[in-house]
Image 1 (spheres, one colour):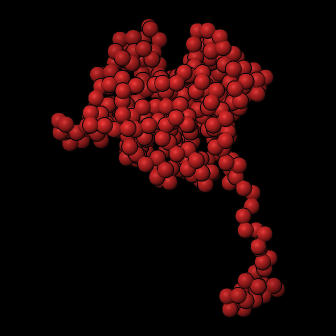
Image 2: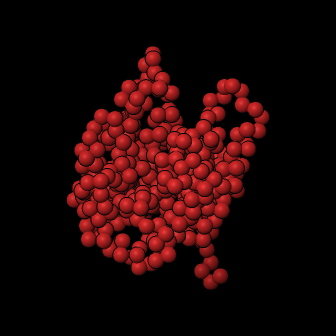
Image 3: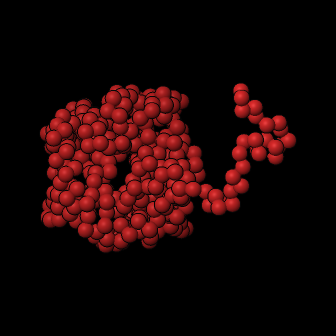
Amino acid sequence: MKTIKGPAIFLAQFLGDTAPFDTLENLARWAGELGYKGIQIPCDPRLIDLSVAAQSQDYCDDLRATLAKYGVEPTELSTHLQGQLVAVHPAYDTLFDGFAPTELHGKPQERQAWAVDQVKLAAKASARLGLAAHATFSGALAWPYVYPWPQRPAGLIEEAFAELANRWLPILDVFDEAGVDCAYEIHPGEDIHDGASWERFLAAVDNHPRAKILFDPSHYVLQQLDYLDFIDRYHDRIACFHVKDAEFNPTGRGGVYGGYEGWIDRAGRFRSLGDGQVDFSAIFSKMAQYDFPGWAVLEWECAIKHAEDGAREGAPFIRDHIIRVTERAFDDFASSGLDQNANRRLLGLPPVDASL
């Protein structure tokens, strides 16, 4: 069995314009001082130059050396924003323009081409950094039709997933060439948002060996999915793990859909670690049981608590939940030490002829 690596922290929610949140080195120092051993790095030009990282081993070696000064290492790169732009329904064109450089605003085809190139560069950069997996979003073409009213025309969802697969298969092939897994965060707003939609996508990409899952239980709480059963079903495809808490407290006026309320007033909302309802003891047990080989990465999102307090509390929370797996069976002390022929005698079988 494998012991999960960690604690680590996703930097996206902390990146800002002032120290210590303004540069990769400052963030690495800050994370290391809080007790984190790894950082998941969003592919933001303020933190990493993807074009250079995809081509230059020296650049990637220097990046790792800089982080190592503060006792941290990269866990994964993230292209959540770029991955979202691989597939955008026209209803969201204006809203998602903010995920791309300003010169691409109002140009959905050019924006998509840029996003595809960015994710491919991230695959190559991940390989040069010695990373096993990459975190991203799938994007969405069918999301406006997630609720079946008005009745969806026959073939609409199948066509959407066929196109989604058509856009991602060349990217997945680049990840395969790089020897890196591409882990999609199962997330509302994406066409891959639960187990059923994941199965649709996986079938559409012909069970591509690099198509993997970023498991984040908070999104399962908000959808009222069984996140432990999800691990049982799909553990062989889980390559990344966001440790994020959430709660769901429905009332007579609000439930899963939220009634258009802000996060603070929704029945389902994200919380800092330990403040929500996620059973992390059970999750970490499942991950250990199934030999999850990666990192436990805090993603902080909370409608109530300050981000820096959530980060400070997150490192010990994750550390205390990581299970150092046993190297031997608990009942080895009672081993009988019998050999094969002794076992055969117990079964009433003749001994094995050692001369054969």
